[in-house]
Structure formats: C-alpha cells, structure tokens
Image (cartoon, rainbow, N blue to C red; front, top):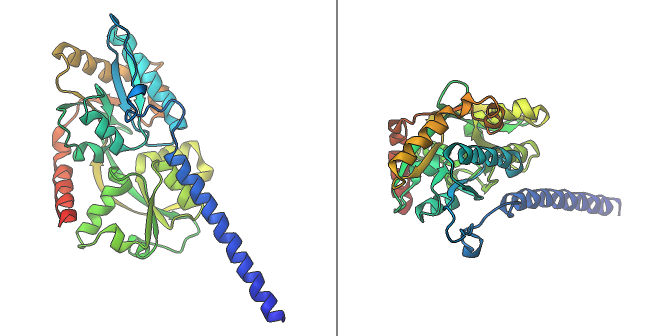
Amino acid sequence: MAGTAARRMVAAGLVRCFSLFFCALCCLLAAGCSDEQGFIDFSRRAETPAVQEGAAKPLVIAFAPVMSPEETRQSYQRMVEYIAEEIGRPTAIVQKRSTGELNRLVAAGEADIAFLSTGAYTAYRGQEPIELLAMVETGGTVLYRTFLIVAADSSIQDFAELRGRTFAFVDPLSHSGRLAVDYQLLEEGLTPEQYFSRTFYTYHHDKSIWAVANHLADGASIDNQIYDHIVETNPQLAGKVRIIGDLAVAPTGPVVMRANLPEEEKARLREIFYGMANDAAMRPVLQAAVIDRFVAPDASLYEPLRQKYLEHERLQGE
C-alpha cells in the first residue's frame, strides 16, 4: 500500500511539473504570436494607413523587433518621427511580428523603408527592387557574432552536447537566431530537425534567453549584441544563462529602401540616417534599440551569406 501511495505521489508531481512547463511555454509562444499594441497587419487591407485626398502620401517605414516589442517600439517610433521632421514629409510606422512577414511586406511594395535582419536581407527575393540604405554600427563594428547559450546550471559544455536536446530559435529568417545554426549543421550534412529532439520559435532574442533561463529549452542561438544589451539592462536574466560557444561573424542587419524612390529623396534619406547619431537627443533612442549609429552599407559583406542561403534552400528542396 505504501509503495502504491508513493508511486501516486510521484505521478502527481510529474503531472504538476509538466503542467507548469506547458503553461510557461504557452505563455512564451502566445507572447510571441499575439498582436502587439500598435501592430498593423497588412494582410488585413482595411488597416493600411489611409491617405486623405490631396494629402501627401506618407513614407511607410517598417520593422520587425529583434527584442520584445515593448522594449523597442518606442525607439523605432521616435526614429520615424525624427525622419519625418528632417525630410519634411509625413511618415507611417508598420510593425510586423516576424522577419518573413516583413520581407513579404517589402516584396509587395507596401514599405518605402524597412529595417531588415541580416538573414531576411540575404533571403530577400521579392519582385520589388530594393537598395541598401544604411548598416547598423554597434560597439565600433558593423559585424556581430552568434552566441550559443545554455542555462547557467546546465551540464552542457559545447554545441555537440546539444544534440538530441530542445533548442529555441528566434525566427526562421534570423541569421543568429536560426540560419547560423543551419549553416553549421549543413557542414555536417544535417538539419536542425535531425540534430535536435525538438525546436520552437520565440520571435525575440530576449525571449530566447528567457526560455533557456527558465529551462523551456536546453539551448538557443542569439545575437551577441542583444546579449550584451541584456547584460547591461537585465543582469538578473543574463546571469541565468551561460555562453558555450559562438559561430562565425556576420554583418549587421541593414536598412533598405525602395529602389524607385526619387533620387533626391534617397540622397536626403542617406544624410538623415548617417547624421542621426550626431543629434544628442537621438543617441539614447538609438542605444535603446542597440544601435550606436547608422553608416554607409557595404554590399559585399552580405554576398557570402546570400550564397549560403541559396545553397541552404537548394538542399532543403532536394
């Protein structure tokens, strides 16, 4: 009888633990999947910003936050307002949940300017021609690394020990949050689906850190610049994870613009972006978005990753 009671207590405990894990995971994914305040979904055409007859058409500027929207929307909103003030034209901000949605928005010609991730830019195949407008510089460089993280109390020491474990990705088109791992495994002839027992998306780098810190995932891959930002702004969370390695450097995500914008306007936009950090009031706004300043882009930095993505897509189609 005592043995039966003990087994029942153990079983009840396991059920409670699983329930807590499932609830936490649902909360994380719901936060990543739900519409955020101010979110504009262009799949619902009625929500496209209306233009009154005779009014100047707004310059539509779009982004998908790399951190939780509440952490970044205010910074992007202020940047958009600054651009409107400087260019003398009304602007409209569009926030998309994922980089794939943002790419589709740009491809449909629904955005004049977009803050793309590195992976999203190298994967872009839209019919709408785009041009590089600027690159993000942080910490004196336009390059960043992919950090591999585990929980601080995890016994895992390297990437090899993550095989057969649960892994949190940020976004299907995030370089540091997905593609860098894909490319690493590609060298071994493997896919994430073959390598890990289970994967899921958090859609924000800070949420991937949270997922690992709370043992919802055994590991994750994140942008080192976002990690450094979390160390400064939320050291308690950062202290719950540990870096076990990093992957090859990559160029930061670019700002792009429609290629058919008037040449005078494109030239003015370059002036505005490259000079934004010279405005003392804008520096803290940029820093909150993990940006020191915008600089002239170097297209050659993205070409090797574009070729890797094409190879990645070819192998997936086989």
